[in-house]
Amino acid sequence: MAAGIMQHESEAVRIQAVYEDQQQVEIRAFAVDPSITSYNNLKFLIMGAFKLQGIFTVSYLSRSATSLDDQIYLSLNSDWDLDEAFQNASEPILQLKVTKVFSEEYEEVNNEMARHGHNVPSINRIVTKTKNKSKHITVPFKHTIKHHISKRWSKLTSAFNDAIRHAPVNLTEWQAYLDEEGQLTRSRAEDLRMRVFNGGVEPSARQIIWPHLLSVFPAEMTEDDRSTYLVVKGREYARMKLRWQGLPPEKTADITSMIMKDVLRTDRSYPYFAVDNNHPNLLKLFNILATYAFTYPEISYCQGMSDLAAPLLVTMTDEATTFWCFNALMSRMKVNFSSDGSAMMTKFEHLSQLLDRWDPEFCKYLKDNGAGDMFFCYRWILLDLKREFTFNDALRLYEIIWSTLPQNSHGGIARSISVSRLNRSSSNPGNLDNKSDPNCSNDSTDVSAMYYSQYGYGSPFVLFLCLSILLQHRDHIIRNQMDHNTMAMYFDRLVRKHDLNKVVVKARLLFSDFLRTEIAPENESDLSPTGDNEPIDASISC
Image 1 (cartoon, rainbow, N blue to C red):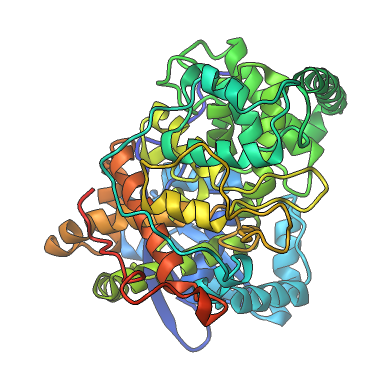
Image 2: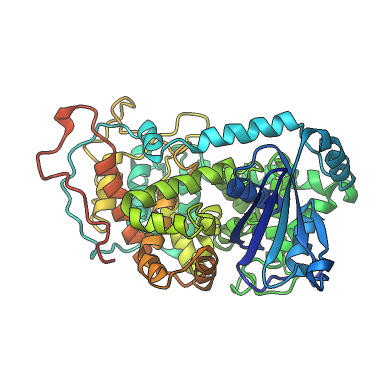
């Protein structure tokens, strides 16, 4: 691997975009993290900021401009152009010019982008995509979760108690979840997830437990079955890797260069990656990302994926096993990297709806100060908040997030986590017994369903973690009259400095409150007696 890959000093770069068409000029400002912002990411942020439909071009003001009369705008058509823009744009902000392209100009733009090696879809396809996206993001958050959570559950009886903290699951406790053949049965898998949700996993047990949280193994394998399965999947990974390694260099250079650039700047301060550029640890990460990119060309590689793979590699250490864990993780996370940006826009919209529910005053403040689009939370949502905490805290955060997801049986319908158990666990973060929940029936028609495929396009708990952070900083933001730019810079300074325990505990309370007060029971007989379902004070000190 070559050294000298360009580094970006700041986690955030301020952007001012000017949009021009035949009738109007609009200006928007926001901030992005250059190390995880691709050309496609930037395009969908621009589309959201200006509510654009159709084709548009983007150019940036070059640093070589010496006066207003000598402004030089250079075209942005690729990730390489964007990287150059971050390095050489006019300071102190990156100034963009966005110009709408009308149908008669489309062929000229198409030819120009083709010269840069980009395939441009027809204008009809793009207009259709943006229209579909607009329809998609208007679905209210509450309606989305109602579709995936059964409205029948038993009355909540646990009181709020954020003072008790369970120890993480260790190897001894892990063995207690297995039967005599080493199987993790479906019912015990749910018990394990709820236990991890409350306490996390002991570092020495993560290599064993993480693949189960990520649903790497088909359901109810014995211990011997799992060992054999990893050997088989290891051979499959080796074949997949050899397949792309055997391609001509000219067919792989663009993607491998992009991956290499990101590998060389991913978590380099953490001991596992604080090594020479040619160290096997970095080569493993490179191979995992490249194999995924060439195995799934419709997804390929996008900036930010290295951040998701790094914690897996540090924990699992084995390259092949890490790949399959990453593959499982990406089955949920890949929508974040979609070129049309629809999933991310949905998450921004859902987060805004949640904030408006808990704190309409703060939500209005953000809108009045140009931050109502929630773009300053882009890095949080893209990476499941990985960069907001120290690396070791991010490991615990990830396992807590994964524990809220349903067990995937590899081809069958995913068995959900019982809402009554998750709700009780959320409302009483430190009090969860390890016994089977009597309210959880093996009959799928009676099990409270919590499927997440549409709910925020992933784990809904991530959005409550984001909400937790926002509410904890709202007074400081309002008191200092921060706008979208100063807010982005403020949270940029807090990278890897947030208190994980404080954020997680408050997120659990917010999540439980939402389930109890917003998701109506199906029948009046399911309603709790008067006083049992009063809203919980989400401002409780954490």
